[in-house]
Image 1 (tube, one colour):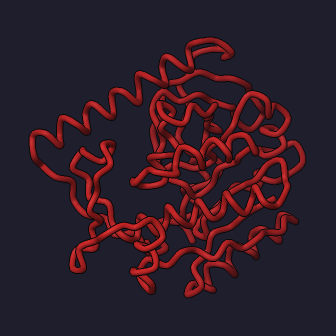
Image 2 (image 1 turned 135 degrees about the vertical axis):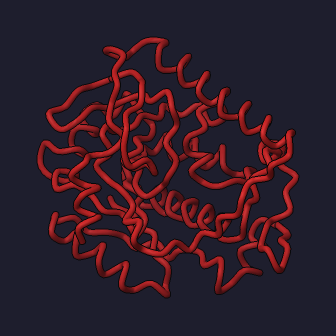
Length: 275
């Protein structure tokens, strides 16, 4: 089942996504996104948070957030929207769920017979979550191939890929992810990719068959990181420990070979640029 996150005030995005899914013969369950702009007080109240009324930066006491990166109300609203989507998936009784954001653009073979989703489901015991999208637009990353397909590979990337526009979950993976996210206060893509904490069997599909349409305006407030020495050190430590955990995890067995894989399909990027 497909669970697509969409703001009530963005009907054009929903209509675009529905048309794309209809072309693939795939129905979608709409998840009404939590609106961090229209109802800031409700967003904060859900988890008892406090934010500066001017900067909209949330006051944090989470040890994982000591890296000097501001966490905003809009990021918390996005976090809550993904939690709602995962809860809806679990309550549906489905064994697997695809979570999409409404700015997702996907390749023609994502839902085709023998395509990306079919390939992933055919080896489902190997994973709890498969990331189908990341924020990188070019280049390659090193990791371990777990299964090759004509159209790509299931891939354990040593470098985490941010972004949450598309990911495939098993029920076990969804339950683990919700448990890990329950008391966490940080952007949802940081939670999703942090194998140190949730211990999910998290793989990527390489190259990514989904990308965000970056021409659509973002509702997320992005503020600059702190430049203090402590914050820079914490960010470096966090980045190193994430990489180290992934290297240990993905070289520990079950993979086929080390490989350099592209981040995303060039044709997908070119298609977004030309529209």
